Amino acid sequence: MQIVHSDDFVMDTAVEQRVFGENAAAACAAVARLLRRLEDRMSFFKPGSDVRALNEAAGLGIPIRVGAETVFVLLAAKELAEKTCGAFDVTAAPLSECWRGAARRGDGIPPTEEELANAVSLIGNDVLSLFPENGAAQLTKKGAAVDLGGIAKGYAADRAIELYKTMGVEAALINLGGNVKTIGKKPDGQPWVVGLQDPDKERGVFLGSLQVAAASVATSGGYERFSVIGTEKYHHIIDPANGSPAESGLLSATVIAGSSMQADGLSTAAFVLGLEQAAGLLECYPDVEAILIDEERRVWITPGARESWNPAPGYESLSVSVLENNK
Ligand code: AMP
Ligand code: MG
Image (tube, rainbow, N blue to C red):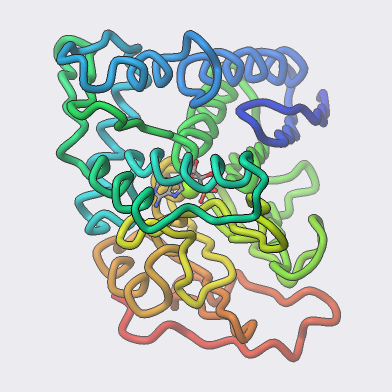
């Protein structure tokens, strides 16, 4: 049996593959190609991507042809925007641009109220029209834009696992920048263990772990990426309700689901919504579990995930509570 471990950087993030089986090396290489192809379609920045083409045509009054995969992700994103009352919103891109733009200006001044209000007027499900039967999409307002950064990596993890399966891989783990998806069991017969980042420590310091069989685990956290404006750091997850980086009282939100795309979108939404509203949202998803870490570093776990959680050595004294009234 082949055992392949590969580290890569695709879709603007670190990608780790651990693949076991007869065909592991070929499957790992095929997944690397798949990820590059998906990046070429869904990148916000790459010239020629579907997303760039869509954004460049915003307000021109013409639908743009995009790939079937992009349409699929855009449809899922719109549905999630509805279910989360706009907390998850891929059209929040003009707001992200405001914050990145202020960082680029370098004068230490955050976006003005006016800039943010203008960007807020360009977002929401209404500005994005989809025509799945024609493989097309359209942004109806000039200046509107979509950014699939909160969901595309999850989609890519789902596709990677599908590809492993069709290539006869018995067990694998893929981690796309905090979107982990697994199949099978490790060759020693043990379940996969997914570490949960300590939001206050450098990358790779875990405050606990989850034992999972075949599952998707996605974490969103304010510590992941940020813009520096003056002496302040502003993280990358925007609360579309007010246009600013979300301050919901959570340090991170982890979601466990069957679909990695769903876990990705919901973890971003949960981070924006905060503890109480996220718990309410999760009640609508009976097969989804979550682990939320608040600003006091308390850990909140849905009942179904309680058994699979283990604190890391040195973190045994963390307060861990079960999210009540969940499902
Ligand atoms: P994640 O790391 O999955 O939580 O996604 C964060 C990324 O999604 C950001 O870097 C932006 O590209 C994008 N994003 C930021 N705020 C939102 C939001 N409220 N809804 C959807 N996508 C967002
Ligand atoms: Mg996400």
